[in-house]
Image (cartoon, rainbow, N blue to C red; front, side, top):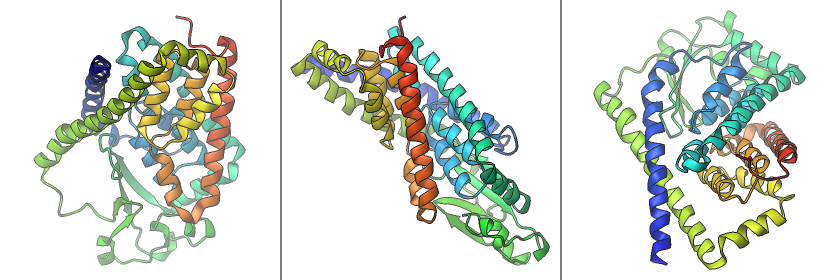
Length: 352
């Protein structure tokens, strides 16, 4: 029994190494990316989906807040959610014999994110026009911090236009979470600091900035390490549970049970993907690597898994109806994708 736990610990250490590499890479490239990323115009879904492929779930949280502020369209949000890869990539890379299997999964998630992103914007033209209208009245500037693994992964700086002629009082703008178009202000009042949904929004660059050196140590050193250790703990717990179950039940019996009920595995994987935590992507990836679920089930489950974004989506109680629409759209798309992608491979993993 001790050997079982030792093997689970060693497997978790392998994953920790992969997660560390990716988190530090993201931390290093983030400053070059954040100043250039703007989710506006026709390329917004494509840009959002491209960033979501990176192994992190922070960007899906950023997209959720931008959506609530009427800064991105419904299609862009759905595209980001579908493409979010969370911790699936490092999990697969920790198992060299299955590492290549993640490539078609990521490619499919990218294509699905772009496809549904643009199709949904074409169908929901009214939502797109609301966003376009809002952005005409809100001269926002924001920096996306991919390496911040908490709810402050977006710094939104909104430039206040002095005078009432640039302010809009329409119902759509008033119902958004963006304060800019509805605030009559003077130049002195533009120093006002406002906080919304845990993400800091300032009308001017903060005078009391944290020391640059200390900030860099946190961003490039401590935060990636803490995030990697957090993932390691999740993975270790999951590996321990898998190890105990395999020890007492047997891997062959588990895989046989899952494959016997293979027609339910896509739905099961999507339901697991609903769990707003990186642990769900780890479970789905591990089941696929074991051979318990097929390609379609893994793809559908990972499409549904948007990290912790659903928590932040439903924190905005003012738009519960819209939030439910987003959730059920994600569920329906993920289930459909899961079953359609399962058919060519007879609900089995990829044959290589």
